[in-house]
Image (cartoon, rainbow, N blue to C red; front, side, top):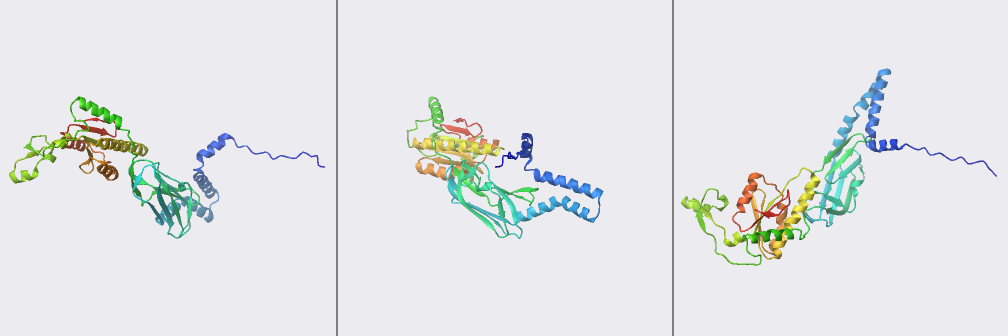
Length: 364
C-alpha cells in the first residue's frame, strides 16, 4: 500500500488585469502580432542581411496590400440573394425570408460575416455565424424575418465583412441586393385623447360642426384673384379663355371637412429615426382611424414631390390609406414646401397640424 501523498497539479492563475487587457484587445491581437513580427524582421535584416532576410522582410511588409487585394477579389466573386414573401409587411409580424450567399470565384473565402441593423431580427439569428465558402459553394438559409419598426426602409442583411486568412485585415462592404420593405404600424387609439381635446377646443371657438353632422352643399363658386391667393385654386381654363384670373372657392362640404397637415422629420441618428418614424406613423393612423369610426371624412395633406392630399371617408378609403398611401408620408419638406402645404390646406373650418419633431397635435 502506497502511503505517499499524491502530488496535485497547481493551476496557473492569470491576473485579472491581464484578462481584461486581453479581452479589450482580443480583436486587435492579429494586428499587434503582425506589427511585432514586422519589427522583428526589420531588426533581423539590419543585423544579418542577405537575400533571404530581405525577401522575408518584403513579404511581411507588403502582406497588408496583398491581403486587401485578395479581399476585394473575393468580394467581387461573392453573390448575395435575399427575398421575403412580400414588400408590404406588418410591424412585429413574422414573414418568410430566404437568404443565399455563393462564391463563384476560384479562391476559398475563409471568414465572411453578415450584418443587419436594429430594425430587423430573425427567428434564427444566422448572422452570428462565420461563413466559409470554397469555390462554387453556397449557403442557403430559410427563416422568419421580423421588422420591428413601421416605415419604409431596407430590411434583412445589409452588409458583409471579409478578413484575410490570419485575421489581420478586415473590410466591410454594403451589399447590392437590398430588401426594401414598407412596414405598416399597429392600429391603436393612442391619438384619441389628443383629437378629442383639439375638437373640443375647436367647438368652443365655433370652428367646426359636430362630428356626426352630415349636410349637402352646393358646388364651387368663383371670385376675382387677389394677391396671396394660392395658385392651385386659380381657374386656369377660364384664364386661358378670357385672360382674367378667378379663384375657385372650395365646396362648403370640402371646406367643412377637417384637414390634417403632416410634417415628417429626418434625423441623423439611424436608431432614433426608426423610433421616431414608427411612433409618428402609428399616431397618424390612429387619427385617421378615429375619424373613420366617427364616420366623418378627413383630408390628409403631406409633401412627396409636391403637395399631396388623401381623403379618408370610410372603411374602404381608410384601408387604402393604410395599405397604400401611408408609406408615401416620409419626405421632410423645407420651409417653402411647408408653407405651400399650409396654403393648400387653408380655408377649412378646422386644420389639424402634426410635426414629427415634437409630436404635439394642434390647430393651424
